[in-house]
Length: 108
Image (cartoon, rainbow, N blue to C red):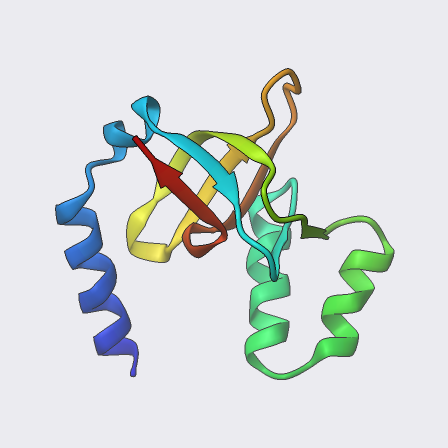
């Protein structure tokens, strides 16, 4: 399963250069979590992948992670294509947050 995921992410990385995000309009998708700190995001994802919803909710309750609302315009600040992560910010707000690349939809 991991090999297929890595191959898919590599194909995505080759098909869509990171610089291409700068010229695209992106909005958030529903059903994803985000976190200000990349390490917190990684930990929440690990908890969820282990089906430990209670541990993931601890991060959300402590306001170290949050649910992402759908349809929010975002600016892509950084991407880690091979790990499937993206750093975003909302226009007009300097605060950045990390989430999954699948959490955004970008158009030209």
